[in-house]
Length: 253
Image 1 (tube, rainbow, N blue to C red):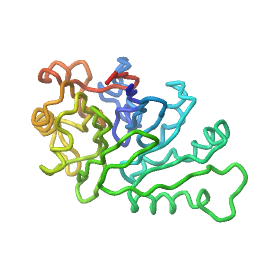
Image 2 (image 1 turned 90 degrees about the horizontal axis):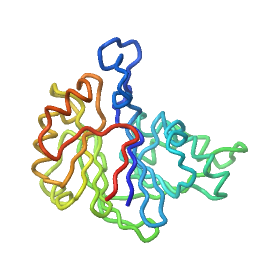
Image 3 (image 1 turned 30 degrees about the vertical axis):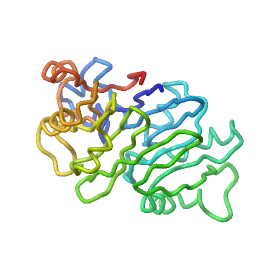
Image 4 (image 1 turned 135 degrees about the vertical axis):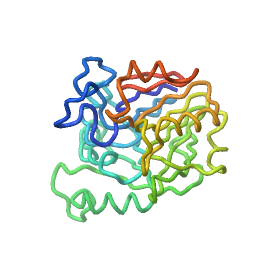
């Protein structure tokens, strides 16, 4: 299985519009963060988790020319806004794009992209195939996927485990039962927004505690704000086997 980090930034991305902090002015490519998303290649399956506002650019940056499915973690715009651009894959592959999400996420997508789900569609509109998922394992083709239920303040969010890899974004709480689903993962990507405490995201200290509890062989932090600090500086503060993710990072699991 090959994982590509398409974006490792929080909802505003990094650099942030109007900001002149040292992170937003940094020339280090690792401090340039598009909105959070990953690409997963396993066997013959190519899938993306979340299609944020940078989806088009992420597909181009990483030369992704085949896409078989999309998983959605939750309905916030920084994770869904780019769904319209799946039309390019519709045209090339001559098939509808399967999307997998809990019902409340599908309902929000139907509202925000009403023209996509309309009975009478405008020519060229994206073609989507809806698949409702719950907190139970499911399959795409022959690949087993296990949802991980986490909380983003009061909003339920799904992380996903695929084989020995787990991806969790936009969380500030994971109960013990869900943590057990993650344990044994070789690679974990987990959100860590900033150093200060936050209402709906793990801060750096809490993310480290969670990561050490799970004890994956390697953990990467994602969904990072410019307020976290420079990539090279924060990296020096992290415990063994924990690193910051960055856009374009490729992992073999």
